[in-house]
Length: 308
Length: 250
Image (cartoon, rainbow over all chains, first blue to last red; front, side, top):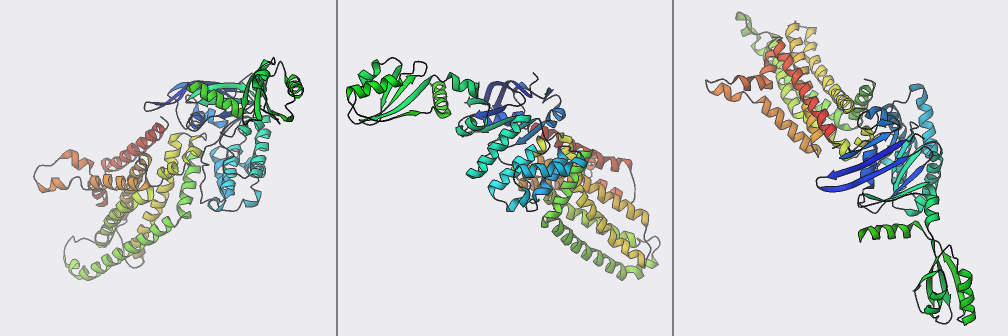
């Protein structure tokens, strides 16, 4: 399968500081790649390199088969990019601005109005099309930024924190839009909202201190998470030693005297036995609920392990 | 070529979206009109004396040449203000990435922006030329000399704009760009002042001086050397601008 983006061993130095170190990945059509990382991890630098705004210190980027350094114009033709600050000419109206963007991306004249209207519709900008960008709220400005990135129907769409500054309803709309876009295009999006990745991405990458620490599909990720957790509360204080003897239980983490979290191995599923033990010992089971393991946990555990 | 047009037209239009272009046009026109009228008045006063002298300077020498010389000095002050925002502001507002991620080369960006802002300055030059042309109603002008003055001023603004654009590419702040442009242009303007003070002439300084070439053209001598000086000057700074924009990515 031909990849839309192929990045090989990207490195980027700012002076002596190494912002991105040996990052390689690829993106195919129909994939939505979530790029996660704490602040200063190198997300934006990587995005800037992919969009041709920054030259990598070493490494190679191919977009749609064209090398970004050797054939920049061909490569950039299939690229739509929303930087972390939306690039807007604030003294233009939304329509004028999108018109200029369409011209810059070489959209054919007879196709232009249709392209602009379509992208305004998708981003919910039709009502404000005549207003000056400067007078729009931050959320709307962000939407204009997204509209600009998808305007020319590029194969690769790179969105750097697309949902910043949006209200919850808009965030939901944008996520739906991203999922839609992901069906016909390749999308890369960076974020530090883990739920966003879980909701809208097919693949996830975690970058920490310039290095990729995880590169996995969402299903693969969920599959590989073999540990589960249970929140249990009882009327009387239980004996943790007894609980630990149950096969499959890895650890018991007390929160208060009668409330604790049990970490267990999913494949052995000791839930039933835990319940039975608590009842037969007469500790008085009051609550037992599974804790859904979120990306947050993986994120924290990954970034912490690579620290130490 | 298409992209250059697109960028140039956008740049030209956006100058007129802010009050800047209108202000510059209005103020310059007012000041130069005043200078023009003063020169016409002077000519009126000394005309009887001039009539008695053989080979005396004519209307064109007394009105047009001072008008264009003054216009050149005022443009030396104004061009940096018009060009300071070109790339600098794009970079500060983060809109440069819009151009950088679009399928456009750095040369297209620089030349497009250059032509856009040059458009305004050429309008200015044409408006200045209209003033002496209005004298045609009642007098005769040395059209050759007027043309060479027009050409001189046009070449001058092409050179000024290219310097301004380059400074705007390397500066982090518009005022720094304006100051830098003004400094470079003024230095090149006064470069051969010292040569007139002592007997030793420095060929190099004289060649580098903008003023010398400008005055040569103003006097009506169309020298290839002078014209190519301005063209080389412009191309050098445009080239420097393109390469420094390319360096931005590194």
